[in-house]
Image (cartoon, rainbow, N blue to C red; front, side, top):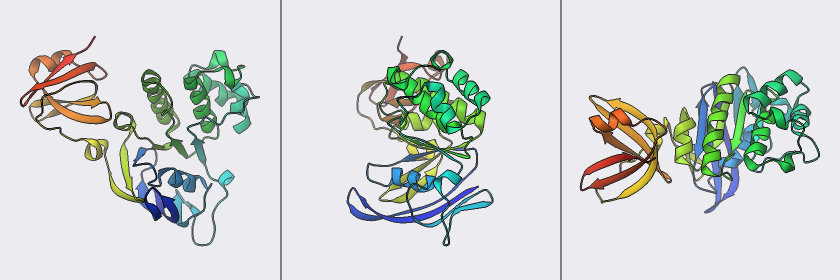
Length: 285
């Protein structure tokens, strides 16, 4: 387990507040941090990485990264940090950016292959697309073989199609390298798809911690509507099949009839419409 109990006074969206985070995270899990801007999410990641000081303790495996007596230097913490702005060295090629973190040529080649960057290894980052640059940034963070991978809204600047592609790649890398991954995100769609657990932070404190279903799912009311969305999950609830559908920044559950169950699958783009209390889900080609 990774046991975190940290406190720090900071200036939040509503003025001065105390960040007070108490979490126990299962090693190897994917945890998303959700909350409004100014609630302390990024500061929390920076404290884990050792980039900001705090009171309290951080216990990873058999070592204390932070306690009452000392705080381990960031270089001595087994952490990979991926920033929203990529933070690549513009005068180094893709491969040189990776090798700057660790001179392991074999690992660099493996990461470039997993992220389809092999043919771009000698290219400068400034000539790459945003999605390609973010791939390089994630690969560089993994070059250190970190115990914890920290992702601060890594995909927020990308379009939807690129976000969905990189979501899959990040999950594949997470499983391949068996890291504990902690990601800040404002996208319920992204969080539901990628996370094992979700921590909801409000005013510097963890208000809820649980599975994506427990934290995110909200059942909408009876108004007539017609919205386009994407199926994130289909599961059985007793004798019924239920589709979990992302519609913009909301996630809803819709019971499927027998015909819908046969033709719909996870990943389908759909239109959700209703007359009175009976939602109808139609696949969009």
